[in-house]
Image (cartoon, rainbow, N blue to C red; front, side):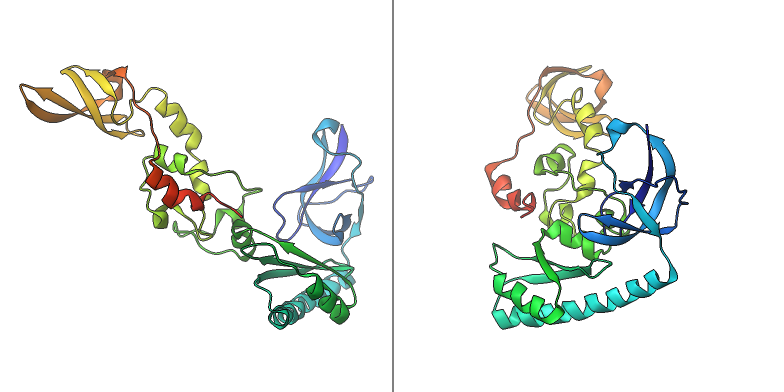
Length: 290
């Protein structure tokens, strides 16, 4: 077992473990630590606790100290520098004629590095831009190209559900989301209804997918041939969550639809849920996170 403290950083997407070095840190305290990005201020979200050694990546960086009054003053100065750097970088981007969109600027706590996050449709040669920025700020400059989902996470916003974006509020990392999920969940394949603020498939499609996959194991799909209490028929509509299945029965050259509980049906020949070439062509770009 190893003693750890969990630290969260502003705009970071997960909790990082640090070595408390025999000191006790309470949840909510601000601390100064050294990370791969440099010296940073973080917030304790997991106070001292023992965890299995195999669950952490060793060696752990130690917590340098608790944040002091001067550190909060430094943080405020850094935030002012970030705003200045954002404006300067935008001006330099126009000056160099680069096809890129600046999203955010972050300064390490000790000002040893300024990171500029941007989006672009393709690769961008920003070497001259880096030189220009380094000449202005006299520190190490790093530019990072991010995807549109990362952009939404950084900037935040409201989803169609009326709540803050999941990626901003609680998601630690992005999970793959596919059009097939929307198809299997019986959702409208209208891009406007299944894509999020970022223009990609909504992350929430992933949340209930495991449940839908379980239900699909014993629920006949549209087009399946089933045996009903009234004879054989073809499934024309399903509701996975309620277990109600609409079946088309043909009797005496007449066609009539009946609704049954899934438990009352026996699958004779099931069907597949497939995306048509037209759907793949129209919606494929929603899966792309480049």
